[in-house]
Length: 199
Image (cartoon, rainbow, N blue to C red; front, side, top):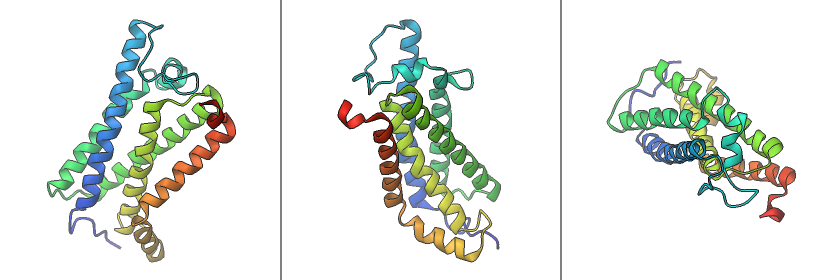
């Protein structure tokens, strides 16, 4: 079935993408500045370091913090810039081609997979919660949900009618689903790190 996304620009989704990506890029930019500070002075006390449990120095100084050979926050700066641009284009009335929507979905899916991996590294390996990283995690989850459910309900991602109806119903519950994801992540962190007793 042909998709219906081009009939009317999704203004609500556009505004959400701009807001979420603005938060994401602010966090990524702050982490980038902190990384530069660490490179200049490895012993520097960063503003994001609150305790042994909550801080970003450990993450930024680890190999996990530069998985692809450069600081991870640069991925965030670039990626969230793209999402802001797409949101602004939609808000201006742009009608995006199906391949473009699928490319966006591939990008946010990759971001979610990367975030889940980074969460696992923080919880199970590094044993520290990075504040700015958590901000990035917090916006990546609903952005993935919003884009994927939108693409499913409009037929951009080919799916049976029942799946499209389910996606349309879940689209209205993104906030609740996001909160459930946050609670699941917090539960894993608590079970593994016992952070409530270590704060």
